Length: 225
Image (tube, rainbow, N blue to C red; front, side):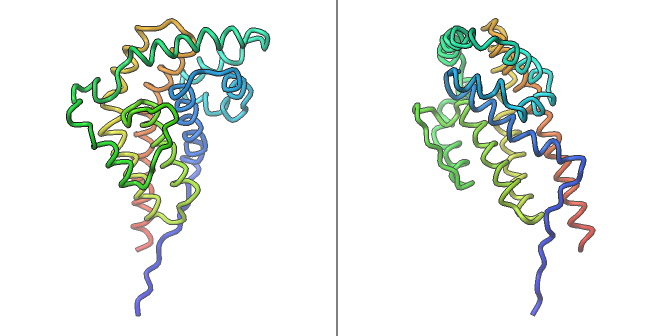
């Protein structure tokens, strides 16, 4: 009888800070692209120490941090009211992935199949479409959590890593550059400009790091054979 051993997951120091911060960055983007900026949401992120660390990974994150942390508490209700109106306007004007790529007919079941194949079902409180920017970003956030906290081997981490790599290449990075370009032109809100700059800078960086970590895991697995 042959017993097959599965290499345990070891995170090199070079990737640890990225792994610690990327899930938080995805969650920041999901929170602000997925719902109106309530007072509790703005207060939560403006006081979150971990957010400050994660924000330093991108210039857009630093913009967002400066904006949120510079507000006087007494001004937050008025700021939220203003940004709330801006969110409604922008989400009504900016296209989702299918419209951005001109592929409305093809997207009926494509993304739902991708989510289902990964065993993920979203609870859509606002009836969001599967190609809504917040839903696609939440897919990445969920996979990150699974990879980081529920994977105990190189093999399982690689499987989740490859799903994320493919989703960035085939979906998010195919349409978010144009989404961000249109968002930048459509608003002068420091909140949404910071989020836009954060998104357009972080996603290519995240793909690059995923590829580098994948290469590192492959090398580690080969060395143990």
